Image (tube, rainbow, N blue to C red):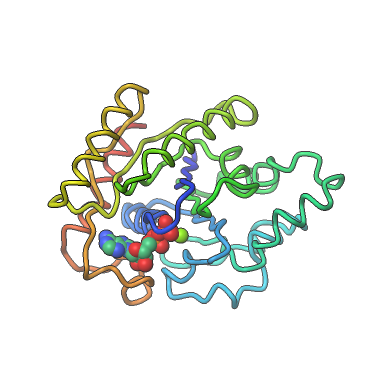
Length: 260
Ligand code: ADP
Ligand code: MG
């Protein structure tokens, strides 16, 4: 069975793309066939593999809006890793769909309609998402089996977490009964910071009360890997450098597998 995992939250800069691409790296090393679907118009998933998102003639936009066969918008990014890229075209997705709504009677079901037929080509499908809860994220939540939620411990992070969990509940009820929260993963954590440990404690209590997994693995904040584009045009897990950050992605994947 193909696992479709969305990395979602309504915030930017919290490692959605880093987690998506680094997990793809882990799974590819395990010999799994991986598809990354980028749904964020910033196109950072392509950049993580050293590919320029603006150079693609066909992207997820063409698949969802014009019904282009999905295989025509998929490129091979690395051994075992295919990518359906996204670029600035996707900035018009919501406008295009909503202004021609009579042509799209089920606007939240476009991903399911067009992408379900290719799922069986892959072991794992990882979806990178935009930092908001618009029509794109709605399509993702109507399509994915599991949601992995990055949580950066900051003053207002709990509010965002509650919002995305509420959105997931709504979409589960209305469009996607199979949807489940895989878990919350704390990102960009500096364990020495009092605020971080305090907010993580609050997050842990909230998750326990609501029956949500907060993974033991945290993705630490590091200075070395803070450049916006991955090292050597590859996600860190596909480089052979041994360090705590890379190890954390392998641990996260292990915990995610254990959780089903
Ligand atoms: P999002 O997709 O949620 O917007 P990104 O994955 O693009 O977030 O990460 C945001 C920024 O943080 C990027 O510039 C990225 O290179 C940087 N970054 C990634 N991992 C780390 C880390 N462990 N510590 C510090 N910065 C990081
Ligand atoms: Mg991103």
